[in-house]
Every structure is written in structure tokens, then in C-alpha cells.
Image 1 (tube, rainbow, N blue to C red):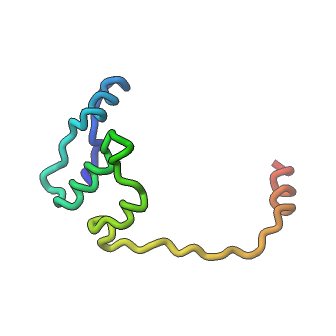
Image 2: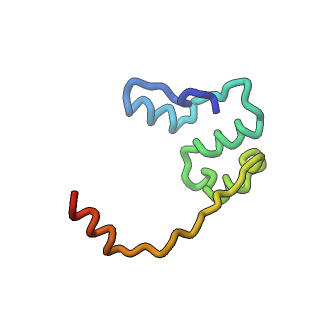
Length: 88
């Protein structure tokens, strides 16, 4: 949403420290709903971090969201795939 990563650190340890203390800031142009969702996603505590089902129910996330439609493929014969890969 911001077109850049929320953390920028040259070392992995420094990156983990930044994430752990949640020292990130959202750009001012993001809506409060987007900011709230990002902060909940980046919560370092796995017990309080937002879950995928909770993200799917978030009001900001649901704006304009269209669930994917999966088409059922024709019956696939696995023997055809084995034959194809044996030629490679």
C-alpha cells in the first residue's frame, strides 16, 4: 500500500529488533482503517496478532474484495502427467 517495506535495516538482527519493538510508522496518506490493519498484521506477539480469518472480516479489507472463483478442472489423468515428465 505504501510502495515500500515497513522496515529498512542493513542487518537481519537489526530488522528483527525493529519488528519486535514495532518501531514502524505508516505513511500519512493511508486511511485509519489501513493503518490499523497493518499494525495488527505486524504485531510481534503471535497471541495478539490478527489471524487470516480476522483479516478477511476486517472492514477495510472487505472494501471491494471479491473472493476468488475456482473453476473445477476436467478430470485429469495422472498417467498423462507422468508420461509428459518422463520425456523431459
